[in-house]
Length: 336
Image 1: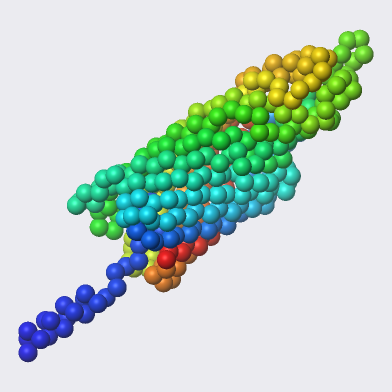
Image 2 (image 1 turned 30 degrees about the horizontal axis):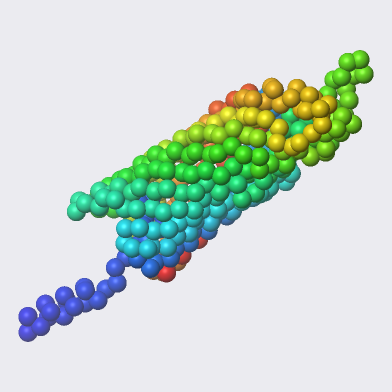
């Protein structure tokens, strides 16, 4: 009788489904054939800082709200140690009439190390998809460059590692990655309102000097670095909590040369305009703090709420510097 009872209890334990893999875990890796999707919708508030670029266009101290942000992260396990993954993000900021895809990457991740005491090391490489859309904007001497979208117009690649360890309910991890972009002329710059000083006539519209209303330039390549730390706590089968810190370095952009063919006068004028833009001094550094809480509704469905605050240091001509930058949002995670 006792033996039968023990066998029944053992069978019951074995029949109990294992807790679903938690997509909020920073070391989450899909198994072979598993597809996952993480869809985030966020609302951001920004207050512009007093950089030269913001002062130049009369935007220093201005509030931008609401800024709508959508991000999609998805992937598919090829084996239990290799997965294909992608990430795409879109931002719409009506206050500065700027919108478009601000992030895109697609690549592979490989679980190179997984030990019996729950230490893992992942290696990954992603294509940087900044070249899907042209960089668009307008340029005048008085207001500088005014962006229409968030694309840098450049292709490139990300390469990095992430590593961490799990202690029962607690997981800690870190990552470091390098982003290399390749200069090109995948941009459209509206210069219809650009006037340059011409002695003795004074300011003259460049469109009267053989320059079309839209031009393209050859941008320089860039190298950027990101790293971060994460902590994750699985309270029980339903609830989990996360915290993170991330550093992003955004390099200065620079113009190498004019890509649009012009006549002799147009080339001479364009050279004068481009010379000061060889180093645009528009880079910035971000220090991002995040908190999240997630509820596992079913084995396949999870909902998380998150908050994010960004401290930054912007170069003089950057239009990305802020005194306040905060975001709250909701994330829907699916795994099949």
